[in-house]
Image (cartoon, rainbow, N blue to C red):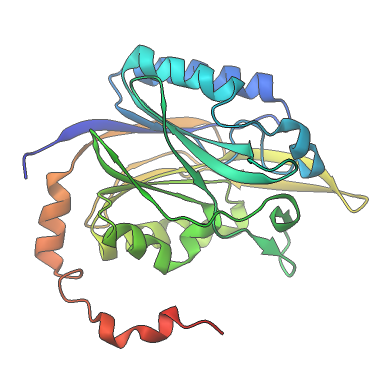
Length: 287
């Protein structure tokens, strides 16, 4: 494999809850910052366009893809010749159906892919609240997008808690996975170790961008607070952190990656070669 080196970035921002105009301006401004530094791939957090806890306001905030916001983001991608991934609420083909989505726009100014979150979080016994399953419909595809910077997979937040999602992407040829999240500080204890383990076990790069900041919102008549901690990381195929963002504040991290390292890691560990799928049938059994 010919060495392919390029620069990637995690743009860790604090969206203003429900303020799409403000958040879009912040996204575009940060694209300008990394675009001038020759970044080829930039990733923003889950629901970066709106914030996470918008409740039923998502119905008004959601957009089709392509739509007004993604067209402006795509124009920036074309200006700088880069790929950009942004989390946003997507208005589906059927009226009233919404998805928690990530859009991939490319250097030609077009939409290269859409990933719809496949595992929606429902927390009933934690200090935090998630009403995702009441708001969004689950996506039904785990895809790898073929680009001129490699085979790219996308996962969103809770998707990453299932080892199967990462392995599916590896078996479909992913060389790098962009993982966007709005993980609260209650999950901080597992964030780094989980991402490092998945990168090592599957032998690919992970570009993990987490949201930061506090959201204050109403849920069933109660005023609640939820704080995302940031800690975005870029991890190589051996599971090593090569760039790490600050916690509890906005930050940008960037690193040069080399897709030849994917081959080297898989050759060294033999973890994909030595799989025994004939022993794993139970994983695919339905209840």
